[in-house]
Image 1 (spheres, rainbow, N blue to C red):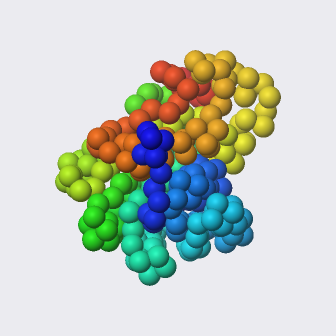
Image 2: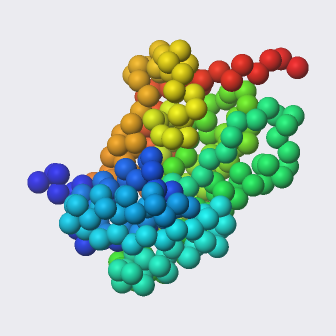
Image 3: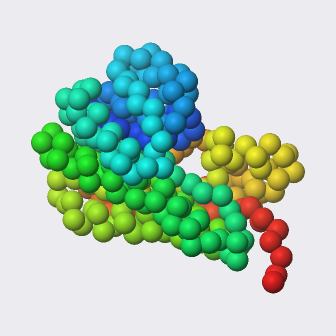
Length: 262
């Protein structure tokens, strides 16, 4: 059956930023599809809650609290997966993000920090995972980019730049790691996670964002988790080096920060 191609029985996945939001939804989706999961984020209490959800699917979770703004900590998760479960097949690079900031307030140091958190961490974990993936017979990497990596909006110079870099890193890594390891990314739009609560908690702002989105709603973490499962499973076996847009159809930003002309 075609649905069997969306299953990942006996596979092992590492999901960064998996204490909540997209990462938590991805971890549970992979577990429901048959994978054991290494969960990592800063807050152990959040990770433990996700681990309980994984356990209810009948799969195993291994919790690794860590500050994943440090590429070395992200890279160490590959060894943690092998130690806990004996193999590694799937990497979901979900950790990242940075706050909007006007261009003239975006210092080189701020830009460098954003690059490290969004790109260097993904590179560190992926390269550390390669030997274990090859030993397991191959693997799949899925990184979370953003639609702001391809469209322009005021205040997103750092965020948009590093997400564009992550998207192109995906294309380059896919060529280097083919044919045994597939590397893809997802350019997400506005998704109802805690990171967006600050703006979506305002009913007027949320309504404006929804009306500016062709599908007229904010995304759910499960919308992205479903795309991650497709790219990580054999359903996406002929897909590599691609950036899948899961953004409600956006062709322009749906959030105006109100930054004035100079």
